[in-house]
Image 1 (tube, helix red, strand yellow):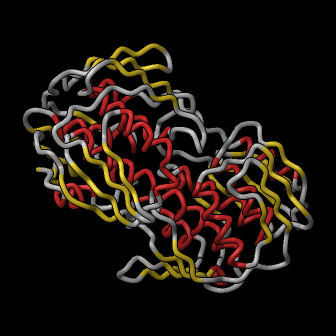
Image 2 (cartoon, one colour):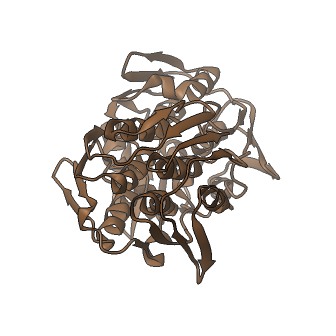
Image 3 (tube, helix red, strand yellow):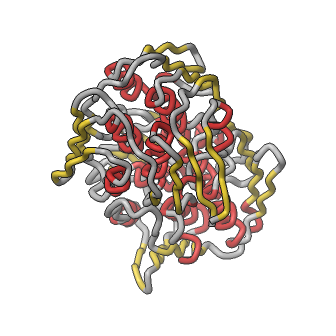
Length: 419
């Protein structure tokens, strides 16, 4: 198993191209199960989670081909068995996204209850309750969701909590249902909108994606089409933070600034000069120490939970005291304990972290505990005095394509070595 070695102290300078969004690519790949013919998906990031989704589709008998540019063609006319087995699902919670499309298109699905990052309870009860309300017969036995339905029926669903994968699963299922489905309290994330746009391109009738009420009028069939995945806003935010925390200047290309409003506002509060164009953003913190910021996570368009760990890293070396309040996942502060090993002054009180910035972090061996936590440890290592070794970086590879190459491009002293 590999680890990252980072020697801190270099102000990052330059530009980096942002990859396609993992959290859009995964549901879009699942949605290809709804298509009558082959679908071709481009701008897909080369990540472990994407590889797992391809393997999952292949295990079902779906024909999947990948070219050297990571354009993926999927043809589910060869599907043999609508089963998502535990050994794949346990490594990636997003596997649950095949439940809705399999049920809607093939009338049955056996999907293992998921695993993934250990960042708290993310129950599938909303997915199950929604599909049952649409007429599915569902039993949970031996760790599997076993679902059957002749043809799902459109209905009005008020989601108990805002859930991205729940919204996506039910929207995909509703695309082939009989009648109109209304999802209220729906997630508004750009990745949900990207999935809706892919479904619409295939022939689905969907209105309201990006708002909290989505209306889906079911159709008889959907056709495969070519589609390009939107850029990854969390990857873009992470590299902008890398520029800010190292008092450098970083420009991200192939991004959508309108998807990062809450993050850019906090970067400006931290003292960075933020400029942007139609598809780029630049953060300039040269010659300045960041100022501490207060962050409270909430569903989109508010501040994203997937960026709080990175801002926690920024606050560890910022001028002043900043608080981070996590409202989405209850176990998402494990990285704070690792940053304490590097000399960070952090006090935890329930779902709140109070961070007093110190002038300098010190290198220490640390261990990644989940995907975004590992990104925060990389950021902390970039400013720590000495060489930091980060273990268990398979978490990073689930969400960041070539992170060491991209950071090295900006001047970071970073390398991947065998453990």
